Image (cartoon, rainbow, N blue to C red; front, side, top):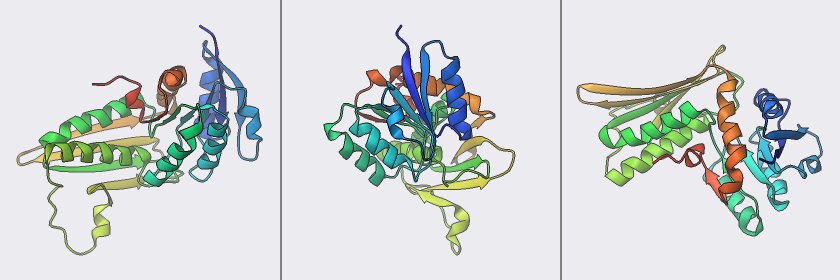
Length: 246
């Protein structure tokens, strides 16, 4: 198998550094460029695949440049609203780029989201609790937003109403509302990345939880994305689409 030339954006960050280490040690990859803030993006043009773990402020400029140059891009940076996704689609109209935007690369987290989507048809109540380190910039997390989108999609298809809630007064105590689902964000020193989806029916509850205890947990998913992006044309949202889950 020919080696895949990989460039990494955000190489000085914790996730970017972990990606650089993984790529350097992988038998099928070669790290040809590691860039951070202020570096010339032209250094990435010899890459077959560019991995972006930068910031919500920087990622769109990076994508505009890379898509214009027909590069395949694996994006782990979060903060993608519908407006931002539509902007990426517009840039890709005349490009040969393939782009994966994934809120989470941990295989367990992807499965957690899929299981939550399947459970949504069977429960009347659901809320999401996401817990991260205090240096995380966005809240709710991209994983929590994606989970809420998948649950809302499933509930809509099955005709389920939104979760019952008689709360009055200060609604902020009920968390952020994402597709009519309450999402509670905790930022606590010592944590890495954790999420629990709690479902309820009269007389029972179901909790689906994933804990990322180290950033190494994300690397198999990043490696899968680098290996398979050439076989997944256009814009793909979510690593679950690469796992061929039914």
